Length: 367
Image 1: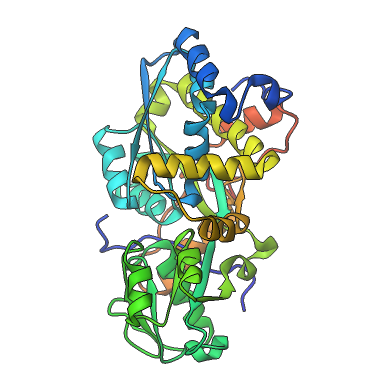
Image 2: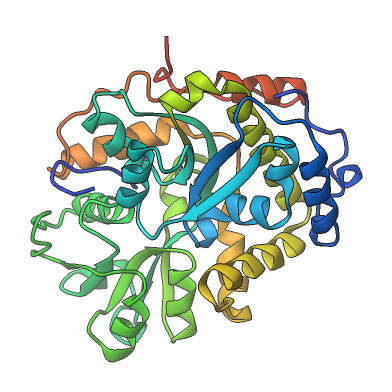
């Protein structure tokens, strides 16, 4: 196994700041304080924009956004500037919304971040922070697959051709010495691109033998009798790899840096609160999911999923570079120029003021 392992990408042909509060508790963060937070926000000073439009996915790897929205933590930092939220089911649609000016800032995975940046020749977005690491697993039917070598010859689902998990799985297959055509998914393993919403049903009917998927889909499969055969984090140095970034429209960043900084403070504060209060944060994320989707995750699913996700402000930039390399090696991406994809100045300002270590852009930051 190589030192820096899989996950990510984008593909040619897929459409697609002030200091932290010393004590978050003293700011009233948490479920019991939501109404107070919104009252404070309404009375606060307005920043340079009347509103900021934030996009994210209704899934657990975007829990920083879920909790920050649910608990009013992000809105508190914005004061009188109103937070408006839009949710998306896939990265390409969120990138389209960013390009169209329908959202200003978004929580999104590394693959669409790279794709959006390279397709616009570096003109439409910047990555301004990390949000989460991990939360991706290979879950299999234990009756058919008992060891990693047993994956050969089986039908394994990934969410989408060229998406982050698809590239990770193709890279893992390659390192096993097996051959698969990346476009068709045919070869020593049958790679079946399947929407996460229907993957559990495909597993139940026997249409697939397993899946390389993010949470909570992985734990939904476990709830149906599946077994976790591999946690992708074990393939990466220090068990860390980026699964969710925060991106911003370059136009919005230029025109409203104070608003961007406020959202970043909200994200940093939210991650600190999540890590200090994991059970409350888990309940908060599930409450927001229920509001957004009409149904909360069952206890078995969310309890299985939550511990595998790490909430971090570090964008883990070196792993994004590795993910792009994996996509190139799979033939799904022409070698990209990622210089300037990161602008971590505001984030590092916030972290430094809080007495926390600054984070690296791995040489891919704005000059």
